[in-house]
Length: 57
Image (cartoon, rainbow, N blue to C red; front, side, top):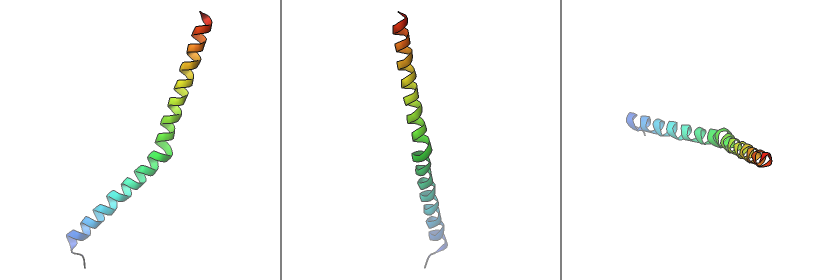
C-alpha cells in the first residue's frame, strides 16, 4: 500500500492543507472585517475633522 516516506509525505500534505484552511477561515472571519472596520472608522474621523476645521474658518 504506502511506504513509510509516502506516508510521511501524505501527512505533511494534510498538515499544510489543514493549516491553510484554518488560516483562511481566520482571515475571513476576524482579520479582514477588523481591517475594513478600522479603515471605515478612520475615514469617518477624517471627514468629521475636515468638516470641523472648515466650520472654524
